[in-house]
Image (cartoon, one colour):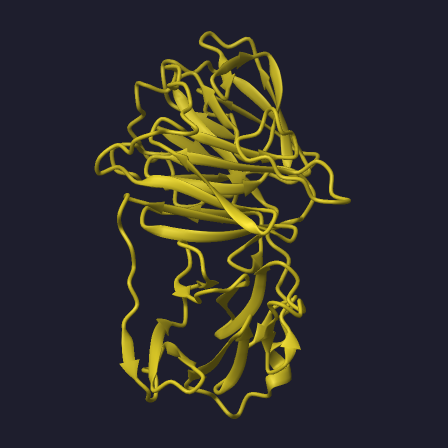
Length: 374
């Protein structure tokens, strides 16, 4: 039985949850470059640029955490960005989902074109992650699955759709407006542009679709990426009959248009992402999530079996006052309060340890992920 005094999300007072008995077992050694896929299990693939080409790396079922840092020796995906230090992006797997999180204070993460600190990658989905201006494309799907696009005769797209039409073509390709798409020549692209060295993405923000370059300068004379002649180095809004240039290809964007809305109202100016933190617990029998909102920086709380603890865990494996957590900006310091069964961070027993988004912390037999509050 887990409860919390104060803010909580998706948790009823004194709600009982089942807790896995495998929490304290050592995770299997990670597999970073498998040779064969496990049948019927989704594979997490990452495409990232190396020079003018893309490199692919796959992570199989035995891998539960992935790190992206500038350290070439201790990172699953090493990345270097000029004038940016302390790069730290974590991917943590919980059940059938991957959580992508910014673990540092750099504010350099965006997901599918929109700045943020955290995103969820579900089976069968794709995420375009920018670390500053460096793109990483994550695909979490079973081997051999592909989403094929169908050509339609040129005409008015259905409500909630947009279409792309090659110049001097009579057929168009239709897409859902509320999803994101990648244009380019590579295998991970949703809309293939052959014989090109340019990549772009179309995504939605506040009911408007935007286009921006993915890799390389948008104003490159060899492979420009523009909307109505304007460089798409930063996201540009798309309107009915917008002319898109990706390298040598010219496309026209068509959609239902609200002509009462001025185009200047769609300048891309996203809100700052929430920096509220939480402890996330998942019932492994029902896959239901329980998010416990944590207080702001400078505050502290206790976790334990005692009903006076801010986070109360009714378990014989949890001590009455098991641990104390002191909050910092985008991090927390956790102390073990001489508990009987110990406090563990990422599988290691600790006396005290700094927590960063993506870390797994276990109190007795109850495991949480330290992450951002959705």
